[in-house]
Image (cartoon, rainbow, N blue to C red):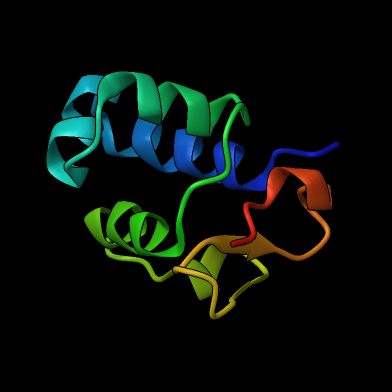
Amino acid sequence: MENKLGNQLRNLRIKRGISQEELALQAGVSLRTVQRFENSETTPRGDTVQRLFQIFGKSPEEVLDWSMEDNRGFLSTMGHYPKKCVNRF
């Protein structure tokens, strides 16, 4: 399955010339969290996605097909993650 969010995040980060460590610091998440996002090992919450893309002066809508569901802000990327990857409470 395509990792659109991770690929976009990695591409923006490299284009900006910042490390995963710097991105993690600016976004208020751990280095391992950034690594997991880029490798599609975890599905980020919607508020985290917004913070990450704001660092690059973008909104998630500009680079992803996504929707926020009223389930504690977890991100559901349409067609990019299997349902089992999206946390639902």
